[in-house]
Image (cartoon, rainbow, N blue to C red):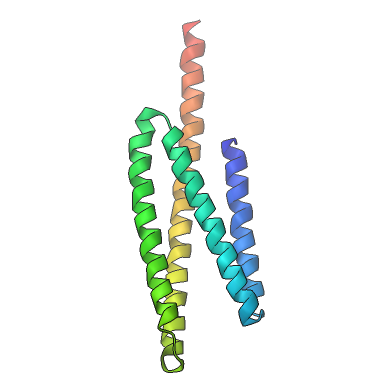
Length: 142
């Protein structure tokens, strides 16, 4: 997949997440649980794809990306564990507090994703710049 295709897919996924959020605000509880499970499965699949891709990365980038991937895995597991334990403790007296915490967690995840998108943009632009420079240097040797 080219960098342009990856950026387009990322944009489409962000729109899909936004649409799912808006739809979820009117859905019934059972349907929401199904959507949460589907979203979690999709996130896990993407996480697995990232691990596989990091394993295939060239040696220079792979060590750094493996570290990023391990840190990401750790954060995801902590968030999931926290959310799961909070779901099990759920009761009417603390429902609003738990909802506030879940909303804060979601807000942080969105902010983190936005930061990752900014980094992806910088990395993609840097890759284009470096490719152009490499092409200039190769062309200059002929």
